[in-house]
Length: 102
Figure 1 (cartoon, rainbow, N blue to C red):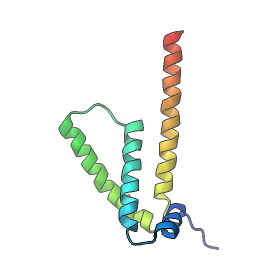
Figure 2: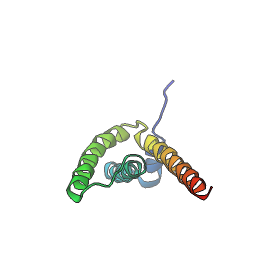
Figure 3: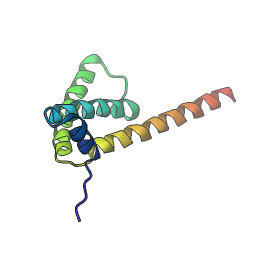
Protein backbone atom coordinates (compact mmCIF):
# COMPACT_ATOMS: atom_id res chain seq x y z
CA UNK A 1 0.00 0.00 0.00
CA UNK A 2 2.16 2.85 -1.26
CA UNK A 3 1.32 6.43 -0.63
CA UNK A 4 2.32 8.97 -3.20
CA UNK A 5 2.55 12.48 -1.80
CA UNK A 6 4.08 14.02 -4.91
CA UNK A 7 0.95 15.60 -6.37
CA UNK A 8 2.89 18.50 -7.85
CA UNK A 9 5.59 16.13 -9.13
CA UNK A 10 3.01 13.98 -10.89
CA UNK A 11 1.30 17.05 -12.35
CA UNK A 12 4.52 18.49 -13.74
CA UNK A 13 5.71 15.13 -15.00
CA UNK A 14 2.49 14.37 -16.85
CA UNK A 15 2.09 17.84 -18.37
CA UNK A 16 5.66 18.97 -19.03
CA UNK A 17 7.87 15.88 -18.89
CA UNK A 18 11.00 15.38 -16.84
CA UNK A 19 13.49 17.32 -18.91
CA UNK A 20 13.74 20.39 -16.67
CA UNK A 21 12.04 19.00 -13.57
CA UNK A 22 14.69 20.07 -11.04
CA UNK A 23 14.91 23.67 -12.22
CA UNK A 24 11.15 23.97 -12.50
CA UNK A 25 10.81 22.84 -8.89
CA UNK A 26 13.69 25.10 -7.84
CA UNK A 27 12.12 28.24 -9.31
CA UNK A 28 8.66 27.32 -8.00
CA UNK A 29 9.99 26.59 -4.50
CA UNK A 30 12.09 29.77 -4.52
CA UNK A 31 9.11 31.94 -5.47
CA UNK A 32 6.89 30.31 -2.83
CA UNK A 33 9.63 30.61 -0.19
CA UNK A 34 10.12 34.30 -0.93
CA UNK A 35 6.37 34.86 -0.66
CA UNK A 36 6.24 32.97 2.66
CA UNK A 37 9.22 34.94 3.96
CA UNK A 38 7.68 38.27 2.97
CA UNK A 39 4.25 37.40 4.41
CA UNK A 40 5.42 35.97 7.69
CA UNK A 41 8.91 36.95 8.66
CA UNK A 42 10.28 39.88 6.67
CA UNK A 43 11.36 43.06 8.35
CA UNK A 44 12.77 46.15 6.77
CA UNK A 45 16.49 45.41 6.49
CA UNK A 46 19.38 47.28 4.92
CA UNK A 47 20.26 46.24 1.37
CA UNK A 48 23.29 44.10 2.22
CA UNK A 49 21.47 42.21 4.96
CA UNK A 50 18.51 41.60 2.65
CA UNK A 51 20.88 40.29 0.00
CA UNK A 52 22.43 37.88 2.50
CA UNK A 53 18.99 36.68 3.60
CA UNK A 54 17.89 36.01 0.02
CA UNK A 55 21.16 34.24 -0.86
CA UNK A 56 20.75 31.97 2.16
CA UNK A 57 17.12 31.42 1.19
CA UNK A 58 18.20 30.38 -2.31
CA UNK A 59 20.71 27.91 -0.85
CA UNK A 60 18.09 26.45 1.48
CA UNK A 61 15.59 26.12 -1.36
CA UNK A 62 18.16 24.04 -3.24
CA UNK A 63 17.95 21.45 -0.44
CA UNK A 64 14.15 21.63 -0.37
CA UNK A 65 14.10 21.06 -4.12
CA UNK A 66 16.05 17.83 -3.74
CA UNK A 67 13.28 16.57 -1.47
CA UNK A 68 10.66 17.71 -3.99
CA UNK A 69 12.31 15.69 -6.74
CA UNK A 70 12.09 12.61 -4.52
CA UNK A 71 8.30 13.09 -4.44
CA UNK A 72 8.06 14.53 -0.94
CA UNK A 73 5.36 17.20 -0.55
CA UNK A 74 7.64 20.20 -0.12
CA UNK A 75 6.07 22.36 -2.83
CA UNK A 76 2.59 21.48 -1.67
CA UNK A 77 3.56 22.45 1.89
CA UNK A 78 4.90 25.80 0.68
CA UNK A 79 1.61 26.45 -1.13
CA UNK A 80 -0.32 25.77 2.09
CA UNK A 81 2.09 27.94 4.11
CA UNK A 82 1.62 30.85 1.69
CA UNK A 83 -2.15 30.47 1.80
CA UNK A 84 -2.29 30.39 5.60
CA UNK A 85 0.06 33.36 5.97
CA UNK A 86 -1.89 35.28 3.32
CA UNK A 87 -5.16 34.69 5.18
CA UNK A 88 -3.50 35.71 8.46
CA UNK A 89 -2.14 38.93 6.94
CA UNK A 90 -5.50 39.77 5.40
CA UNK A 91 -7.31 39.24 8.70
CA UNK A 92 -4.75 41.37 10.55
CA UNK A 93 -5.19 44.13 7.95
CA UNK A 94 -8.98 44.03 8.29
CA UNK A 95 -8.76 44.02 12.09
CA UNK A 96 -6.40 47.00 12.13
CA UNK A 97 -8.52 48.97 9.66
CA UNK A 98 -11.67 48.29 11.74
CA UNK A 99 -9.80 49.32 14.91
CA UNK A 100 -8.67 52.60 13.33
CA UNK A 101 -12.20 53.41 12.13
CA UNK A 102 -13.85 52.75 15.47
